[in-house]
Structure formats: C-alpha cells, structure tokens
Amino acid sequence: CSSDLLAVKLAVLNPTNSAIKFTSFVGGVSVGGNEVATASSFLPTTVGANSQQIVTVFFEPTGYGLAALVMQVINKELPDALVISGFANLNGVSVPITVRYGK
Image (cartoon, rainbow, N blue to C red):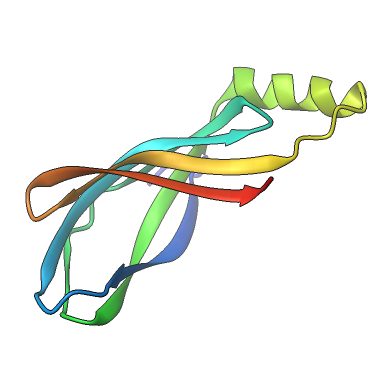
C-alpha cells in the first residue's frame, strides 16, 4: 500500500438469511460537492447470514478536490455533507452504494 492511502475499517451488514460474498468496492468521497478522495477495497470476504463483517476501504486523496474544498473554507462556504458513493460487487452483481453524513 502507498503511504498516501488512508485505510478505514467499515462494517458490511447482511440482513438476509443467506451468506453473501463481498468482492470489492470502488467509488469516491465528496465534501461540499467536491470529490476529495477515491475509495476502493479489493479484499474479498464472505458475510454470513444475518451478520456483519469488517472490511478495509482505502481512501486516496485527490489534489484538485482538496484544493477546491480549501477554497470553500477560506471563502467561509462550509460544506454541509460528506458523501461516499460507488459500487460494491456482491455475489458478482454490481450494487450502487451511497452513504451520506450531514444534510
């Protein structure tokens, strides 16, 4: 792994009565409408029925998005939301995922 990556552990929840195979996740992180990082996980795991499994997602900052975010803050335009969105490969099917923190 590159030292520029931030590793975050997240829970994958499975509320169904069958195990699922989590193969990967790819997407981006946006703050105030600016994409500030890419997100990826390519560490396959099986999530048992009605259970959860911890996966590691790697975030890599993007220069332009971070610069735009800094300019927003300097101009006192504080961002109101952080959004992680992308696609997860679950049982071989690409599933859209969006997690929003804030407004």
